[in-house]
Amino acid sequence: MSKPARTVSWIAQLVSAVILGQTLFFKFSGAEESVALFETLGAEPWGRYGTGAAEAVAVVLLLLPRTAALGALLGVGLMVGAIGSHLTKLGIEWHGDGGLLFGLAVTTLVASLVVLWLRRGQLPLIGARLARA
Picture (cartoon, rainbow, N blue to C red):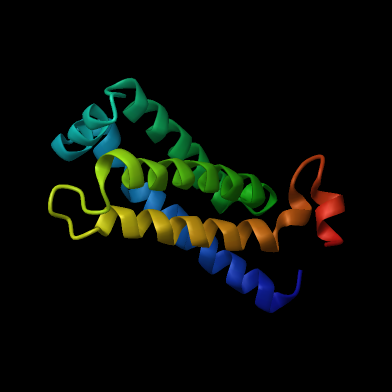
């Protein structure tokens, strides 16, 4: 990977990790907003805990160069789920946040996709084939 590509990847990795990481406190502490969100989805409390655990794993994977592609893949999956939830049950604006949660999910999805593309060659099993693309 070229130095500019590595720099872009690290910026995108940090953006994804910071956004995912800052939500962990709310999910694991049982913050009122987080509980209400997962109640609306019919997934309280295990959906909240499971999502929080998966996000914590994604953060760690994103911050380690050898596993950043896997972290990005996990981040993409989580954000597709989050965006799908916003578009179906939650709405783009959640409890008067002006669409902040939705916007953060879209930002994280885009950043994770950038990392996934730039580090696609690091994916287990299929990375070598994708690196040639």
